[in-house]
Image (cartoon, rainbow, N blue to C red; front, side):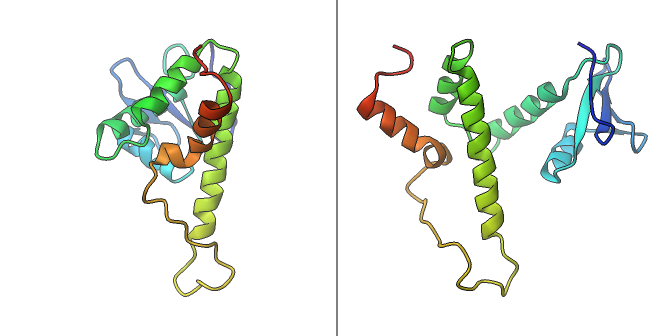
Amino acid sequence: MPNVHLLSDRLIKKYPNRRLYDTQNSVYITVQDVREMVRGNESFVVVDARSGDDLTRSVLLQIVMEEEEGGMPLLSSEMLAAMIRSYGRTVQGMMEHCLEKSLQTFSVMQDSLALPAGDHDKTAAPVVDLSSTTPSTALFGQFSAEQSSESPPLNA
């Protein structure tokens, strides 16, 4: 499927030799550079240089996989298994929506806690001790607790 992207998106072309070309700056870049673009909230799209197919998700998944293989994984085995089980089922759309909203909420919370030095006053959000939770249970623990006590397992 040919790529459709916004004019404001930075266009990255991926060539058959796996090289990435930043058309805005007319330079070859690495996956690490794309990772930094993501961290900088830069809008971009990655397309196959020959076909024009959108490869953005593929490159983002590659970055996620590299990050997960590194030091501290963000996604637990249980969370990954739950995601895999949701593919092709009626809950897939709901799972996608839930994950997106959870990450948006987490981002807003994170931004609200990131105050400049000296600006910590009574308007700051309270500090919550999450030391006994993993990132996945902090975001999704409520769902697994509700599921285990009130409803049958999703894969039943």
